[in-house]
Image 1 (tube, rainbow, N blue to C red):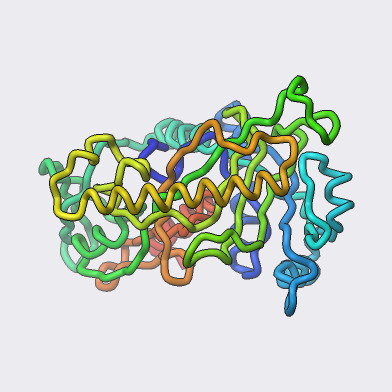
Image 2 (image 1 turned 90 degrees about the vertical axis):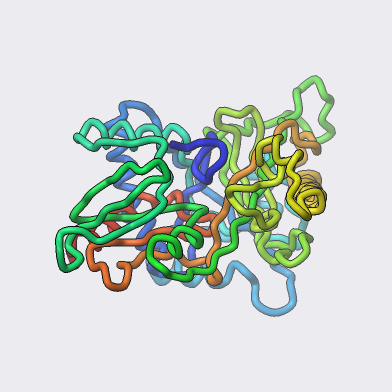
Length: 373
């Protein structure tokens, strides 16, 4: 679980209520108590409330990109506050927003300790009597027990798992496995997103902006910039970032900008194994070069954000990591019973924002598989 070639590893993920759609706010409000329940079972911290700012251009022609969030916050009674750039910089000295920007502050944002949370979930499941089989690469599916009431999943090695109810959550393999197992065509884009870690300056570095404030999750809010990131084809998706957790740097990235990849054949520049460099497949060298250019573009874009808005951080990342996004066409999740198999549920298409809602998604998937309405 939470391996470096997937989507759920690392020291942190953002949780937030900053959604323009009611159903996502509902799912987040359901998930938070369940995260706290898991934390209690684990006996160690798995999440921390930090507050968060959503930054937009207040002077942009047309609609302010924070307006829709302000409207849903007001309608649902969610606490929030609009801060000018100057007010933001004063309250949160880790930032230096330009005068044209504003921040919409919401106190209930926070961070989930990602790898620790996944490990805790697996440990909790085992404590409840769940059997786990790792590794297991699904290769085939068949109905069993008559009238589609049972399911058998076969592994590539020939092992069989039998169940009355089944949830298939294949992550980055959603498109390929949904076709292989069920004959469904679900289009997704799998991208290798690069996150960058920027070290706060040491006091001895002689910062020209005064003392270096604490950049840890105990003092700094998470942040989302709804500004142009300059990445070709996805420039409107902006940026996101987290304060320091375990890795000693602020984590940030230009959103949805990574190269498109196949999860079984990622270029080395996009988080794949070094052996990929030696592939003899036609076009492999070109894919590697294209991925490297795209990753460099993402890092450069993210570094511009740090240069312009995080004055106490070094402007070059000391570490980068790769994370897979499995995005649907509308960035909404796939969560549905498989046609013809009323107790088989397909779940995926997290689109870069599903981790925080994992408890609600799991609850919904299980309910559907068990036939609960």
